[in-house]
Structures are given as C-alpha cells and as structure tokens.
Amino acid sequence: MGTIALAITACSPDKKIDPSATSVKPVIQEVFKSSQTLNGTPIKYPDGKPELRLYRVEIPAGGTIPLHTHSAPMMVYVQGVESGSLLNTRVKPDGSEIKTVFKPGEAFVEGANEPHFVENVGEKPTVIWVTVASVEGMPTTQFID
Image (cartoon, rainbow, N blue to C red):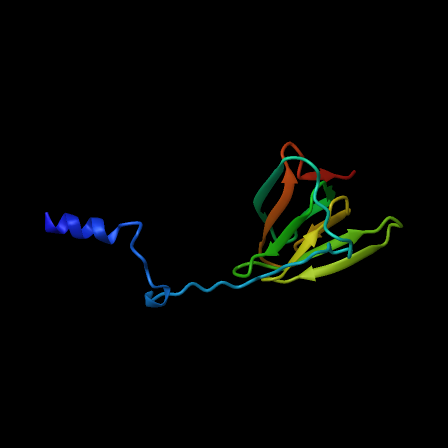
C-alpha cells in the first residue's frame, strides 16, 4: 500500500516541479518571422473560418512545380537536413521575373495571388515544409495555364 500512496503523491496535480531541477532543458529557437511576402507586400489573411494546414513537399532533382498562385499566405521552410535548394521565380504583372534561391534552413512567405513557380535545380531532392494560414473550404493552390 505504501508504494501506491507514493505513486499517487508523485503524480498529484498539486505537486509543484521546480523547472531549474530538470536535467534536460529544451532548446527553443525562432527560425523565421515576417510581416510581409517575398514581393514586399503586407501579409493579408483571408476572411472566413480559420484553418491552418501543414504540407511536406518533396521536389526531385530537376523537378518543378509549375506557375501557380495561392489564395492564402503561406510560410515555406526549406528543410535544413538532407535537402537541396529551392529556386523561387516570381512573375510580375509585366511578365518580368524575380528569381531567388533558398538554401536548406531558409524560409520565406508567399502571399495570396502572387504568381510564381519553384524548381529544384540541385542534384538531390529538395524538401519544403509549407504552413498555410487559410480558411475552411478554400483551395490551397491554383495552377495557371
């Protein structure tokens, strides 16, 4: 019975734990933050019932995601381990292009309705993690012919 009482006491929600007594401390590092898109415009969230989405996208060497837009802003992180770089090409209204290479460990924000395409110009797969700040029922990507 003494063992059960000890276990109940140790698991009690009233038991206070001194944070400095833990031997393993978490490492919390801000990786990226921004209030504007790659085009320099302020981030705008769509109206509606909020829905966050997370995607893992693997683009093979030489692979491309063709010209497209998004209806909601998204944060893109190029995986920092075992990943290649990502070439992001933004297409301006006059047809000119702005090219930016993102290396492993780098991140950026794509804004809503900003046409672009991405390519893996390296020799190994590029893995990106995409977090979308969308609303229920809204498609994530619209491809442009």
